[in-house]
Amino acid sequence: QVQLVESGGGLVQPGGSLRLSCAAEGFTFKFNGKWYRRAPGKERELVAQMDLYQDTTKYADSVRGRFTISFDNAKNTIYLQMDNLRVEDTAVYYCNTWTGHDYWGQGTQVTVSS
Image 1: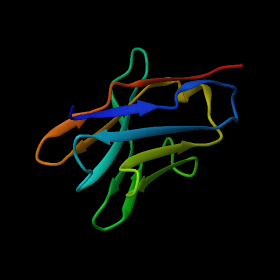
Image 2 (image 1 turned 60 degrees about the vertical axis):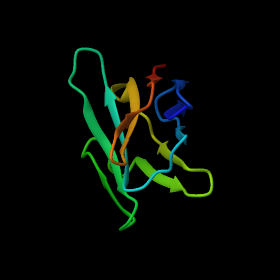
Image 3 (image 1 turned 45 degrees about the vertical axis):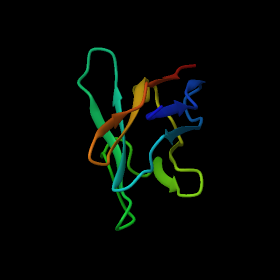
């Protein structure tokens, strides 16, 4: 089956860390990898993206310096390391990639609360 499978969400206290994983099944990451999030009552936000050819990354201002996107070629998986989490980071996080077809993960809930 061709799909992106996400894991790693959960409940964490403010200041804590989580690492999200996005594994490609049935195809190989080729051009890019992206992480989006959608918080309740808000529009979808692109938080991090990676150009796999140029090995460059971009981040939303709201997460720059706290989140890190990375790619493990051997595992065919994209990660989002999230440090110093804030309450406002609470959202459903989705990974996305385009390889001639637009693929989306199923979404994983991240809740930051004390």
